[in-house]
Image 1 (cartoon, one colour):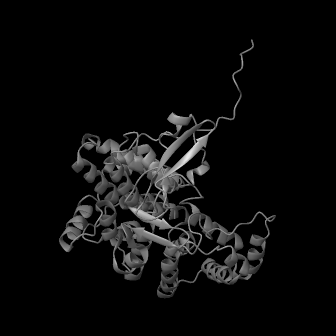
Image 2: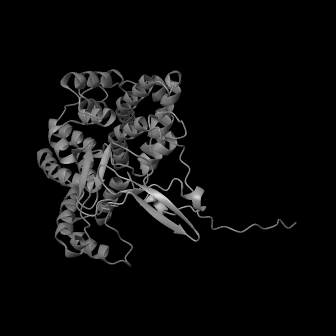
Image 3: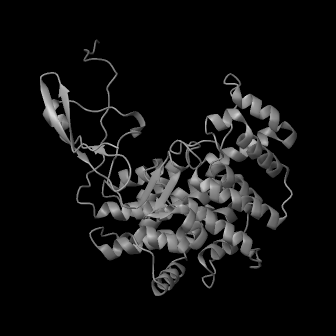
Length: 425
């Protein structure tokens, strides 16, 4: 880590002194905000891989050491000792709640869990085979129409209420979207249940309202939501912040986050894992699949291994890997694709090729397996990710609204088109 307080950039005959920003944890950052004014130069950083777009106190990642902190708390400790609702409170408020605060927050989420009947009409207007993420984005955007009278973003209480509504209603929307795809009647959330149980019952209950809750399943899903709650300035969170920087309301901002998450390189990765397992087909084919993955000319990739940020083991994968084997045992699930996944995990963890390249199973690999064991359709996997990530998106949107340095996002470009040319008739 550098001890520099400033750096000097020489650009021809011009030079500029740029201050260095010191974070609590992580890399120092060169503040280039006055670079263009003093030198006429922009910087180029494709994918913003070395550029900090904001200051944030929510989440910290050290990819080299495999560290993930929510508000300073290690993900391993939160996974073991906390609940998803407590983690949500922590993310949006900055501190863990007291017992009284947690109960009040839990009650408020239950009170806001219902959605207007017009949502059922909207969801029902989609084909049953429409991708659930398309419906989710539309349904979240519709909330801004429902609550248009309480979208004064200068009002802290209205901002907080919108945040609570999003966190409370996205599980309800997700359940209704699942039921629409299955041809089941729309229903209401059972607000006497806890957050995760409420979602499970509304999603899977029969037409006559019957569903037997399995506490092993509740615990597994609660853990998955904790692990997915936030992950710093990833593509979808950056999208939420970019849209939010325009003054857009939180519903529109989160709907944009949903569409960014949809991509197979981001939230759609766990869906891609199951498609890969289906392509492999049988545990007997794992060895040949691993050989194909090593062959760069084969065009075959192992999905769910390695991570853009973590150059070591994904700390979330360590937690969820243990939970996965437990859940599969507890549920007694017999599924050939899960046999493929278990054998593939073992092969990758032992194979020198993958170990040398640190291509360890990541959170997407394990989450896809658990969702499969819970009998959640593959096309709903990304919706489950969005459900957990809504709390992180909302936390970042709230933080951004009170950031005195916030500006509308406006990246620059390196223009590579034609020079000026005349129109010839």
